[in-house]
Length: 241
Image 1: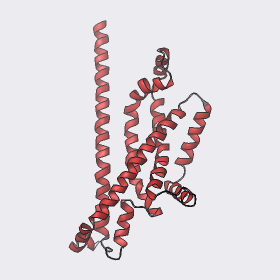
Image 2: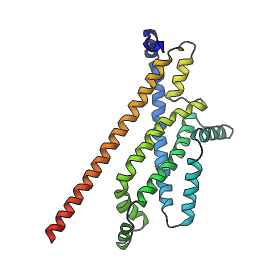
Image 3: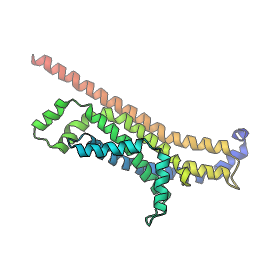
Image 4: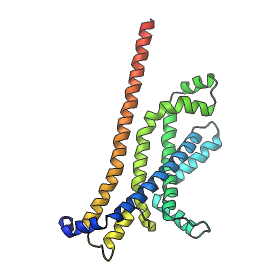
């Protein structure tokens, strides 16, 4: 830990700062597209899990159970080497996007399923009686009400996905952790372990902490709006009587 207070070590980190920014850029890119994929899969399998068709519910259940009960690193290695020995070889970044998107998509599917099932059945029946189809019921009635339930765990998944980009290290990725390791073990850059990993940790914190703060404020705003609507509705009922 002596290098933590070494001026030379910090100067070395500063001199090669482009390495950390490159890793940060790759991490953000992997996380961004991974979140998009996870979100699409989450909505798809979350809706399938609440479908009236048993076959769709079974497909969703199999996907969720298989993905959630196997390590993300194992899935990443399987996908990377499966693609590497096929005729459809892709970059490590694309492998990370696919594996993280598929992995966290299973968790988002459960979040969306739980959010939908938390809505009273009377809401479904009322929407159906008004002539809404399944998609219309979900889009206009059910999902808007379940946002306050879905939002916190979904943001947690986004933060976890961002941190799990570090798993790309196992397949020699170009993410922030992988490039930090390459930096501290390099012939010309080795030795500055503490400063390098501290900077890497701070960069992850800069990405993840604002997401948690924004989600918390958004959740509080939704709850406040709901309380206001309930209060106004109660006042209206009192005035009507």
